[in-house]
Length: 68
Image (cartoon, rainbow, N blue to C red; front, side, top):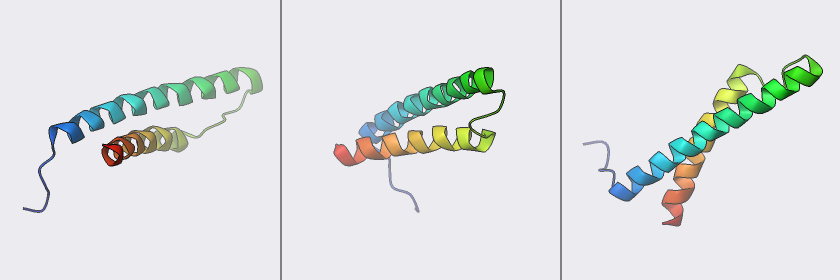
């Protein structure tokens, strides 16, 4: 009633966005840990790492949907 049906292409794009978001989480954690190793302080907060992963997943999915 309130939401439209999601097409198969949009579902595939969301899956690709989730994968991209996951790798963004991993890279943010890795960069943060390398920074801690060298400088003994954190580069990103936990909230920033969460935001990086979620924003990149939604942005990649949106980009793929607009492009197709």
